[in-house]
Image (tube, rainbow, N blue to C red; front, side):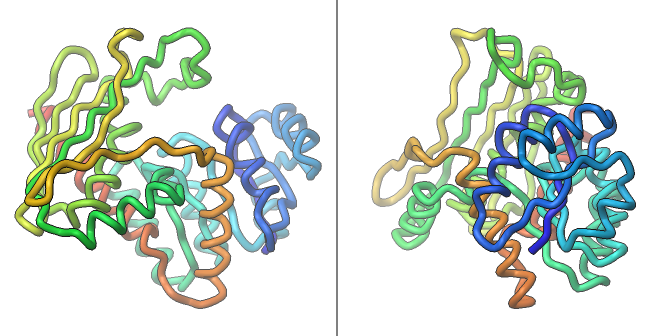
Length: 292
C-alpha cells in the first residue's frame, strides 16, 4: 500500500517515518509539510519524495499517516477521506468534537479504513497485559498517573505550541490514559473533571461495567516529580501496566500493518476513528466542565 506522510516535526522524524519504512507491504512514497524545505529534508532522510502540494501527494497514495497538531490533522484528514484515502491518525483525532464527528462521518460514508495510533494499544507487551486482565475479570477500579515534564532538558516536544495551551495535558496525554483504562476496564460511560495548578487535570471515570477509575494529567510537572503509572485493582489483587521494550517505531509499524489489513478485509479496526471520536467526546466533556 502506498503511504504519504503529513508532518515534519520530531514525531514524524522519530516515529512515523521510520515506522512506515519498517512495515512490510507499505511503500512510503512522499512527505508533505507546511515548510517545503523541511519536507524535502525529511523525505531525503527517509529515501522518498518531498511534496509542497498536498493535493499532489494525495494523487499518488492509497493511505495517509498524520504527524501534525490535532486541529491541522482534522482538516487534512477530512480532505484525504473525501477522496477515498485510508487514514493512519494520531491521537487525539481532532481538538473539537464537531471536527471529530465530521471526520468519522466521512470515513463511514467513504467506506475507508482508519486506525488511531494510541501507542500502548500497539505494543505487544501491553496487548498481552490487556488481554490477561480482561480474561481474569473481577476488577473494581483503576488509576493512571501521567505527569510529564515538557520543559525537562532534552524533551523533543518542548517547542510544541499546541501542547503548551492551557489544557495541553488533557488533550496530549489524556487520550493515552483513557485508551489504556478502557482497554483494562471496558468502555467509559462518563467522567468528572477537576482542574489543578496550571494544566493539571484530575478525572474521575465511570466505566459501563460499573468500575471506576481516576486519571491525573500534567505536562508541566517538576522534572523530579515526573511520574507514569497505570494500574487496576479488584477481586484477584492489583496489577500494574508493565514496562515495555517495544519502541514507538515498532508500535507504529504494527499500526500501519493493521491499517493495511483493515483496508484489505473491509473490517473495522478496534481502535479506529469511531473510537478516537469517543475519546474526543470525553475530552470535550472534561474541558467543558473545567471551563464552567
